[in-house]
Length: 412
Image (cartoon, rainbow, N blue to C red; front, top):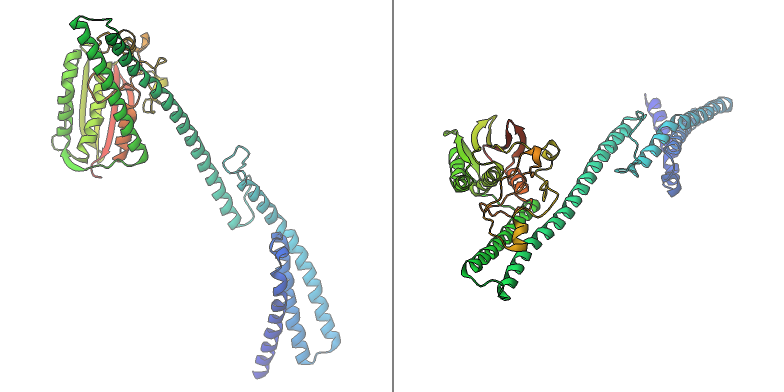
């Protein structure tokens, strides 16, 4: 037993000597940058060398004949050459896959990226390939979102700049007319003063909407959540919008589950319903109906505003909640252009025609009844507030009109 242990110790010492002597070579910078095939061959050579050293040391200790030792060493040498050659050949797919993945990594997110066309030869490389494919998809999606956001930002800057000029031009025109003494009778002067006040209110509302939108985009909107009855939220919004509906000749009514409770920021959700109701009333013709309902479905509070606007063109449904989008060619809303040029007293917008007669797409409203900013920010603010609550808002056409649906979680 002692003899076997002695032989094992000699073999172990000689076998460890070869790797230790090869360690400085393995640390060479050239080898560190070599292909995986070269590394595989180096590992085989070191392994076979360790085996040969162990056999040689043991043979010397056992006093084997030189002939037998030479035979063993020749067999080990031939085996080392065969093993190294086989390793280099088997390592070719791994090396090619590594080069392919390296090239793919350099084109992530670009049109030149090619997904993995074949399964890599090792599980590790296959995992890397899948990770690269997933990263490419996310980068492409992020780039598309960035382009869309940049285009939206450019449109918003251009549109808001134009919309700011309209009330400013109205204020300047009326101020110059008053300063030059063009009008002197009290009724006309009073009308000009009202025009200037409305233009100032429009500017104020637009600035307030821009500030609210910037807070939503920056994620700095702080919600003050409180548990409230769903019916109370709807009744408050209906009561606030009722004067505008009466002035327009629109029938406004609401209904909600009296037992349903929801945890929301009452002021912000009230603004959501107010924007939707004002928008619906503005685009519903006289003798039309606007209905708001509230109920609980699938552990969510569902608020819906339906109107009789005649429907929204399908091409515009997907863009209603985009910032600044109004769906009309001319940026100046009807009535405001007249104020800027002639300072006519237009207290209420003319009801829009049906879609078949070129109805203006309904995407804008303000927080002041009948005097909204109409800059295309209202529905973007609605979406921002709803998403801040963890909900979502959708719109679809119904018979004779359209229906906006806001879904909010019952608890934050």
